[in-house]
Length: 68
Image (cartoon, rainbow, N blue to C red; front, side, top):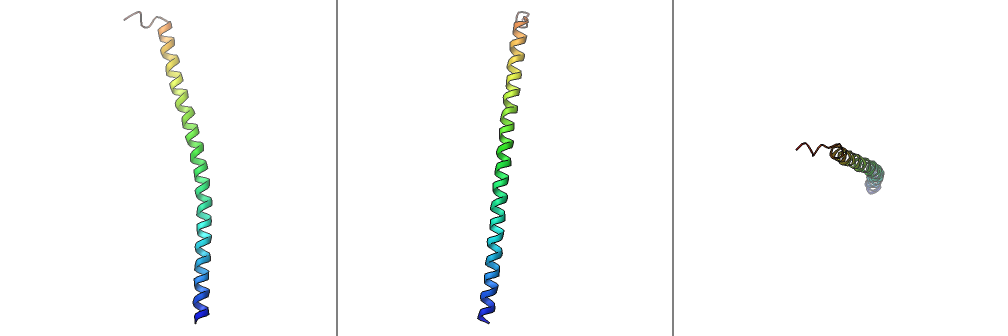
């Protein structure tokens, strides 16, 4: 009876450790992907802001503010 209980507890412990290891690997992979997405979004924001600045400068150089 005691040996059976110890074996079941050991199996449950092994299952929990395996599940925890898999979740840790999954979490690390998700963190890497999120970091990559954040980097991409930062570049997109820079490109949009740069495009807006260039558009304003182009508008000003073509005399856009002189009409006001």
